[in-house]
Length: 310
Image 1 (tube, rainbow, N blue to C red):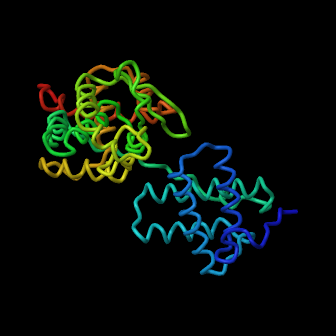
Image 2 (image 1 turned 90 degrees about the vertical axis):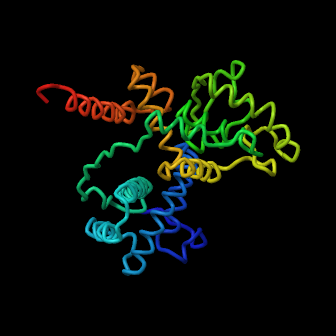
């Protein structure tokens, strides 16, 4: 017998899967240690699927693999990015595994689906000249120039994710500012060395600019503060990177491009793959190995250009 969900559960009247979705996300929150961003993405994927089923008149307990394939076909027709469609499918696979294990359904309709081969795209990168242009973009004598310079230097010096930089606190700086402690996905901590340029930028910001911003702060523990003294959010950091890139004639890049550039430049200069994996906070070295493909592509270009029999 399947478990019954109370009729008053969240979204139970709005969408057929509402109670199931809430139960699955509650389990993930308590047991999987996923980030709030990931949980929001899962909820969004499943609510889109739930709405699709509701419009078709399909009941949750009656779904088969063909129904899910029709949903995925619609998503493909909407010209969604391949990565978004892959995540939609991953959300459905996890969700229906949960539904089977909890007795909501007697089977898992996703077992009927073929496993797609996920294409691996090489990450977008900046070369060292472009990185230097970007890092020199903020005007140091402008009101927030020292802060913005420190942010850009930290992003490139550590390969940290934008959310990790937004979450940095004063006590994230260790060993007199030579090491940064990042809190990654799943509340995992890692230590990343800070280079000399990044250390200098942070010191200048802490000594000459942050005290003024901290005067308005209600919670002054955050490393990077806004004009009002609040924690500088990830969206604001995202916008700063794009603004300074465009000011130097570079493409409208994201902070993740600096993360990719950090890893690639380390490997190009002889860094050990395991060390780069540790600094990036990848649990699987296979994720880090994509950067070896980037370096291989560069070597092939050099070979083709300079080898007499290429």
